[in-house]
Amino acid sequence: MQPASDNISNQEDQNSLERVRAYVREHFAEELNPAQMAALAGYSKSHFQRMFHKAFGETLRDYIRRIRMETSACRLITAGDVSVTDIAYACGFSSSQAFARAFKAHYGIPPGQLRSEAGRRLIFREKWQNMQ
Image (cartoon, rainbow, N blue to C red; front, side, top):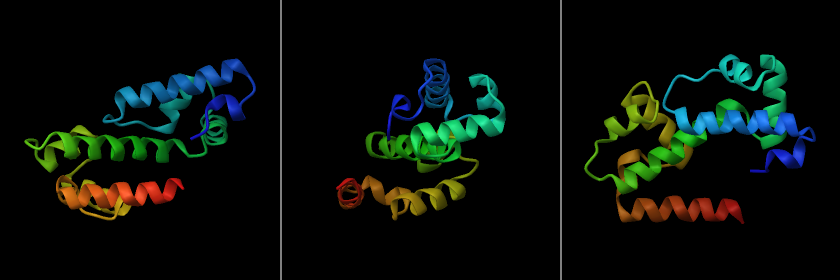
């Protein structure tokens, strides 16, 4: 992900966009919508969405989804005593079924499989290959 400063020249715009990203990282499990985030940044919804995509290379929706996926994956690995359903709700998903579908679409394996050593290796191997 590119920093906002690489794509947005105005310091005020950079600060507004970073404020939104910080808000999303703090409140990712809540219902977040583009109009609410645009208001936080002080822009119209359409202008905000264009600026966000230009600055970060992904849409606000994709950013929120990625934060939820990465957080849920970390929790699945580190919180072995917490159920997959509880992690799904804690990460902002409306149901464990919606979470399972989104997780499998994002990582290629069901969430429960990530708790196994083989599942973790598979995820990290694929992510490593994508980074190269």
